[in-house]
Length: 186
Ligand SMILES: [Zn+2]
Image 1 (cartoon, helix red, strand yellow):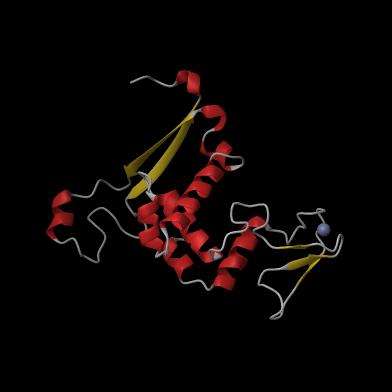
Image 2 (cartoon, rainbow, N blue to C red):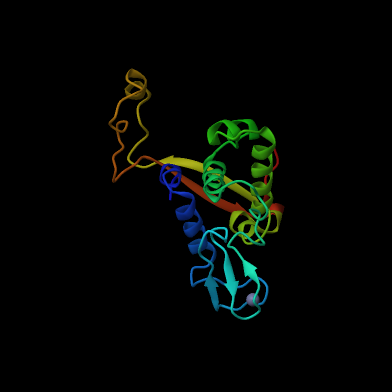
């Protein structure tokens, strides 16, 4: 799901989307591991609250995650994930604050800090580069690099730049991991 699609979700839809990612086979109690639970509905309960049939404990999908105890909506978190993971050269907390329309720099800083922290832990760490190795990221152009002149001539053009189309979208990212000991020195 891209940033535009996430931004159109309601908070309940965003939470359900996150639940599907965290629990693809249904809710799992974080207290006892039971897969039998009941969703608590109604105004008396906050949304996304489950009650375990095994231990009787209550939980939500954000428990034991970097989102736990956050006052920010799940939708804001998903948007922050999307922005931070697609920012090729990184992104400052100030920029994140502006893009998400957050009221405080402190909230933006905590968001960015927690997400970066999660990227440095398993299972993301293993995906991004295990054992302290180096991840190299680069871009390539499929179907030829677009001509600068065609883009500069009309930056607001609705058509993709030359050499790109829906089937052939042009820029693609590639990623490679190499162990630390073989890393070159500059
Ligand atoms: Zn339980």
